Image 1 (tube, rainbow, N blue to C red):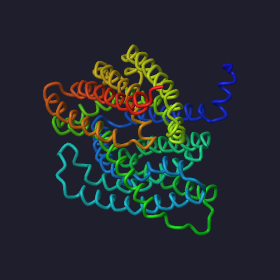
Image 2: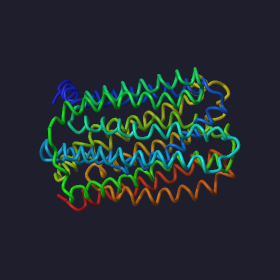
Image 3: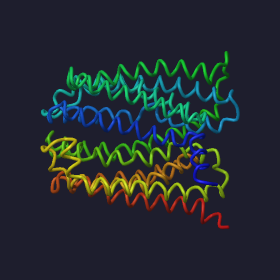
Image 4: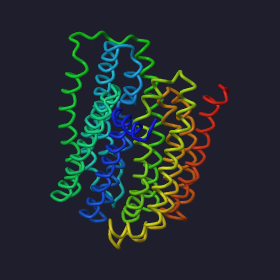
Length: 425
């Protein structure tokens, strides 16, 4: 097949749309974060980071992982009737669970003791608690579009909604500071959820009467969702624990702001691996019984992801100082070395670990991710607690490099044993 034909094929399937759309979405978010840093003082940016970090802990439990089940069970459902059964079950249960989590978060924020330097968080956390049900529901709507392999629409919808969210953050930061940033997230998510629900109901789910999903299938969905939630929870804790422990052990909003700035570029390295993963995931789900297909395509996906992420990491590391100066100003030039070490961690994470973990989850083997992530989070906590008092924010970067590498090796060994060694040709 000639290069032109390959490009045309990728265009028609929506692969290029997802790749470019994911990149554009992340770039808009990345650009927005730069402007927000400029609009807020270091003190306010540290406070906002603390509040959003607190919220992110609660979001780990959003819908008890049910939103992730959409990407699997709507793909493997045998017909449109079964798809709608899964859709109704997941959406209804998600809304009920998320309202409960929001209430608990609001109550919890009022009874815990918050450090003096973050005292404003007590009235800001209830604002983001209102966001949780709508943010999760918007994710579910986008996942539904993806499961019908409407790759172009998925890319457009994700980009537009993310762009509005970033614009809202900027306007909110400029007009009302941290309060405006948080309220903009709530209101814009509500807007897109309303539009999205109307669209997916009319486009994909028009049955007048839907039978209740059978008990055994509800049980399978719940078990898969719980395992996915635990795995994602462990993974989310990697970043959350970093910022939480830095705030707790150093009690310095300025140091926390430095770390958050240093992490922005390394954190966005994941856009490349994520774009590839978003596209290939459902195809691996669809072909999970075809071992030959998996063996052939895993090597290709893994190689492409590693090379692309490595290239981006090297370029950013070389131009780290001028990039920091251009984006954040002279006051943040002290984070250049920290950012370079975080770039190494980002390559190991996104270039080596992510592809294997993503494809195992897509093919229903989420338990391996859960176990290895659990080992990783314990290792990270021990290293952070031991090193942060001695090395400050640099300790987080060093511990991430070590832990991500160990996890990458374990996941690769699991994948190889399951899909290659077990089925030698």
